[in-house]
Image 1 (cartoon, rainbow, N blue to C red):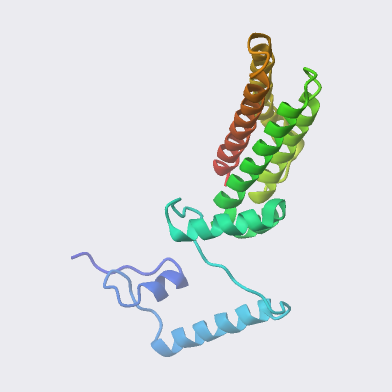
Image 2: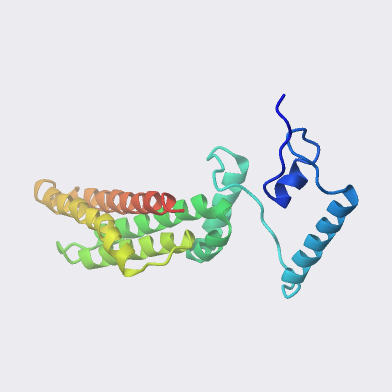
Length: 204
């Protein structure tokens, strides 16, 4: 068995106090005093906060977990107002982003199906997709600086391809084409939102 070594930090010394691999350099009384000092410092840092609730959870909660269902219900109730909360509570982030994508996709589907003049809906759909990406960025606590905006333009630009397909379909399916147009607007917006989630997830 190898000889014990000196701890590399006070935290390691404390956590490995009963381990043979690490030398114990403090007495239990000294450790208790350190814990007391840390608790005092923590309460001092939080003393300015009034009544509040603390949430503790994982940002990787499986979709089939009951907590995920509860988070989805809360996200539906909060709507777009949930983005700021998701930035501070990662456990809510997947549900909030999923709700944002669902709501904006549905909104764009209705706009696309309701506007009969080809091309008139494009500015509205694009604006909604930009707003969706901005909301997802907020949910991840990310700032939309100029560099990030340029990178994400490719994500939003993908939506143009979906809308071009929708306009072509109107020529071939003049009656049911409006329903297909709405469905493609939904799918395109959903794809933009999911791409934005992957973008920000990779950077957190």
